[in-house]
Image 1: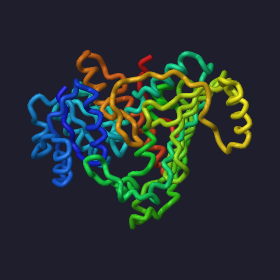
Image 2: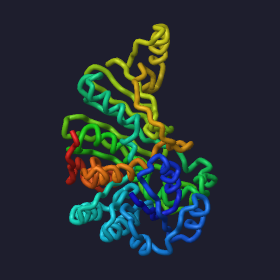
Image 3: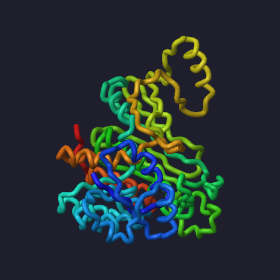
Length: 383
């Protein structure tokens, strides 16, 4: 499938670093309205640059547009691409308002085109292996999930020195304006929805806990930097998701079932280890002495631990970025190419993206949304 990239900023590098994993994706060119960003990107990756967005949309044979622009541009760019007759894979969120996201889904349906949105973390080996372990009944019936998406105080870090492989600076000010929830909650919202289906009801709280990010931005221009949401899924599972830029870094995921629990260490690592423990959080180690030592340590530990019986996980030969985001970003676009080639509907397509976007928007803006909230959107599970 012939693809083109719109937006050559920081995140675009992650797609380029994993594109080689998917030979069915043929990149024919890219475009960025910032000449400096375009020049940096093409110099590093040797990607042809289109002279304009219009020229990109009119490129012969183009089938899929990767919308990697900033969130406030997602709706405009995706709409233009759909109207031009191209499938679209958008960075998160699908749009900055629910109405715009709904309009994109309606347009994709009208045009009979595929529409999907990042993140594709739920397509990784850790997520797929965890899903299989849950469905196997290894921990009985899943009842409760604790999902953590805490990134520590990055605004106190040396972020001004951070660069992508092509040299793009980390867009700190823009990240703080968009908000931690819209930027990061989707990584686990996709897991939760892929595992347990649509959310029936959510109750959330959000706040701006650190109004001075050291960037000189006025507090009123900054988005909430902390959120917590409790969600009830249509299958009865309850989940608590936290997301923020203050608490110590923690990207763990814990599923509590009637007969035990499963824990993933890091949802940003496609090959993260998964551990299984009993209903009390213990495990029978080999040699047994290890289990006894850890049981004693647990009594003094301030929080959940991430040890246990190691669950066998899928393995792939694909290359992952040598960064803290060890994910195959190009796997999402590749799913569209595979569906098109097989002549089948996209499993995690427009309706799924809309539901995840609605959840993220409502959680991010919980201080302006009456709670509890019942999502308008839904999607059909593949199983």
